[in-house]
Image 1 (cartoon, rainbow, N blue to C red):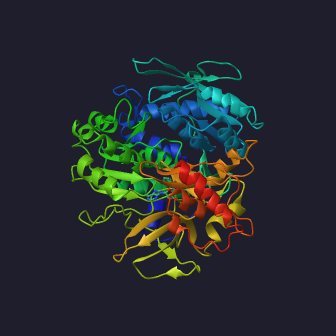
Image 2 (cartoon, rainbow, N blue to C red):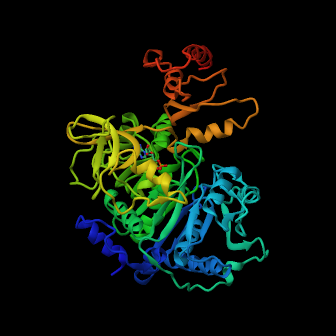
Image 3 (cartoon, rainbow, N blue to C red):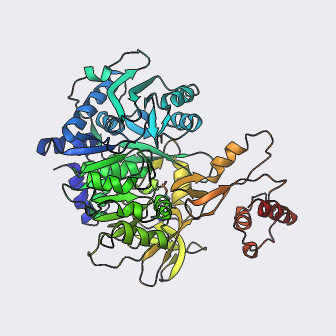
Amino acid sequence: MHHADVMMNEANNGRFYCVYRVSLWAHAVNCLDRHVHTCPERVALIWERDEPGSEFKVTYRQLLEMTCRLGNLLRRHGVKRGDCVTIYMPSCPLAVASMLACARIGAAHNVVFAGFSAEALAERIRDAQSSTVITVNQGVRGGKLTELKKTVDTAVQSCPTVQQVFVRKQLSLFGCGFITMLWLLHVISDNAQEMQKEDVVCEPAAMDSEDVLFLLYTSGSTGKPKGLVHTQAGYLLYAALTHRYVFSYHDGDVFGCVADIGWITGHSYSVYGPLANGGTSVLFESTPIYPDPGRYWEMVQRLKINQFYGAPTAIRLLLKYGNQWVHKYDRSTLKTLGSVGEPINTEAWEWYHTVVGDGRCPVVDTWWQTETGGICITPRPSNPDAEIVPGMAMRPFFGIKPALMDTEGEVLTSNHTSGALCIAQPWPGMARTIHNNHQRFIETYCQPYPGYFFTGDGAYRSKEGYYQITGRLDDVINVSGHRIGTAEIEDVVNQCSQVAESAVIGYSHNIKGEGECNSFIQRLPKTRSGKIMRRVLRKVVEQDLNGLGDLSTLDDPAAVQEIIEVIVNII
Ligand code: PRX
């Protein structure tokens, strides 16, 4: 029996996941070898490249081969168990093979979203102490070319730990699709076609269930991103279980998660969940409006996608373009529609349900976080006819015990109430620590409400006991489903010589969820103890001057009046 099965039984019995710490084969085995034994020619990945109609399919046998060659290449170049490899690539099969190759040899991977700047990449490489980086020379998205290797070249100049960079070379031929040469160029030895020389068999490392599988950086409420650590057994179990049951995934289905692999959604629902279940997963490398706003639905028709998983920001954008872009394409293969990343407003929910899903597919609004590893609150699984209220994440997944806290730190037991969202007991997919900073992990998640995991979000529990997420309670804003710490932006703005200090706040934006408003002014509203009152700034930007609330703790109330004059004129 595979270790994940043991874990699954544990979870089903409702017992704590970490009772047994046994060794298991690396993830690559659970995600690949198992399926190669039973169905080698099944398609594992459909790489939906930028140009519609240029998709590229990779079978389980091919993905295993690619992963083994890469695993051997990394091993031959000294990457060993416990090392951390940074992957800076768009969603593509080689990025997945790179993740699985790390897992196979027992190295942790650290995927950095390929849209991040050299500075952001460098910060993550330094914090992860990576000695190896894997990248691609260039990427193309929405018809635009990006020079990823150049960004890596700049980043590694300030990363003393980096000893080697592997670069996949690909050629872009606009109009003819994107031709990829699956070889690696080892830049240090300048040795082309390294990968092709490697053996297709790569002995998997035996790992402890609590060994690190990957780090993934996410924004917190201070300037420094947090490298959340996910471990072997619990994470895979949770990704696989939620993938199968939340989306009602059945063998033979084509699963279309359009998130980039640089985010946790891509990790859990483009890579680990679908592959652990022997599924067929779409890797989407384009944008919702390239070449036109029908892209998603044309792709659904062409690839016969059964479960579509996307973000409210894209849904809100597409509904503005009108229904004709949806009606043009056959969506009869769709069975479940998923939403993730931010609250989905009722208008977007209704459009997704009635126009995209023709009113016949359940919409699963899935609430979770990088920290939780997988979906925690969502309408399914449940009995197929169970009610789904538009805009609500609804019910906890197996083993998740949500708790709402009041401002005194007491658990709210009644319904029809709002509070800080916590989780009352551990679950398999939870992050175990912050890389190199366990104290920050404890302070952020465990200390605010002792005995509970604090999510940083607020939630409402309805009369019927259903959950609705109301948004972040900390200084983190959500722009187009991406989590950005206000302090991160402030750090950058403060580097301008003309800026003494800054306060970044989010305000509602009807497509992006929140936008940032940056304006320079003479002074910021502060409490007497020197804390910037961001809530006041937010109200001013939202032009809700009656909602400024209690200003009695302000050091100098005149600062607010000055800001009102400047900002209201701008907006
Ligand atoms: O505020 C919540 C919001 O996104 C945050 C997690 O962001 P990240 O770690 O980048 O992961 C995004 C993908 C899981 C949460 O703290 N969020 C995520 N899903 C939802 C959501 N807010 C409301 N409804 C959701 N379904």
